[in-house]
Amino acid sequence: MKAGECLNHRLSTRSQTVDRWKHKEELMRLFKKCPVCGGELVEKEVEKVLKGGTNTAIVTLKAEVCLHCGERLYTPETISRFETIRKKLTEEDVSEFEPIGKTYHVAER
Figure (cartoon, helix red, strand yellow):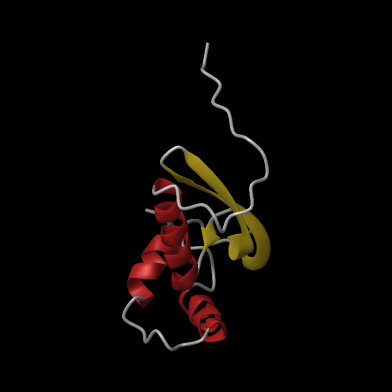
């Protein structure tokens, strides 16, 4: 389980009305250092690849990233958004997504 998923579980009891900035503050309060290696966390723009069924989506977003090991921490809202996107990909409900090309599988030789 990823650290962000553990964080989602720990924060899931918080009120849904808490705004995004407060989640960022809570994230930083809970994890001043990387929970995996103890490295320094900084906010960075990252790309996350999500798969659902045979479909794939790339999401660009901000996350707390460890400068030492690269572990990413996501807010509970972000993890919920990932789950929604994966469900839409699985159900082929991709009308709101922007196509950017094709994906191919290359078999290992």
